Amino acid sequence: MTQVTVMTRQGCSACVKAEQDVARICGELGVEWATADVDSDSEWRAEYGDRVPVILIDGAEHGYWKVEEDRFRKALVSAGKR
Image 1 (tube, rainbow, N blue to C red):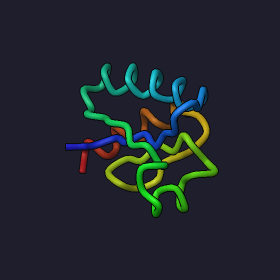
Image 2: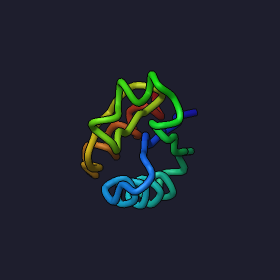
Image 3: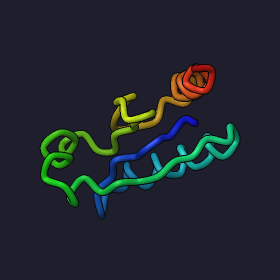
Image 4: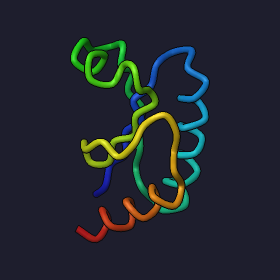
C-alpha cells in the first residue's frame, strides 16, 4: 500500500497548508499519510530542514514547499498500480 509522509516543522505555515492539501487528496484516493517533524531527527533536519514541507511517497522525495495537486495525484495513482 502506498504511504505518503509530509516532513514538517513546528510553526511552519507552509507545512500546515501542505498537510491540509495532502489530507484532502489522500482522503479522496484512500491513501494513508502521516507527518514527521524534521527537527526530531538530526539526519532528517540535515536532509530536509531548509525545504520543508517535503512530500515523500513510499519514502522517495516527491516535492517540497507546496503540493502540486495534479502532479501529486498522478504520482499516487501510479504508485498504487505498482
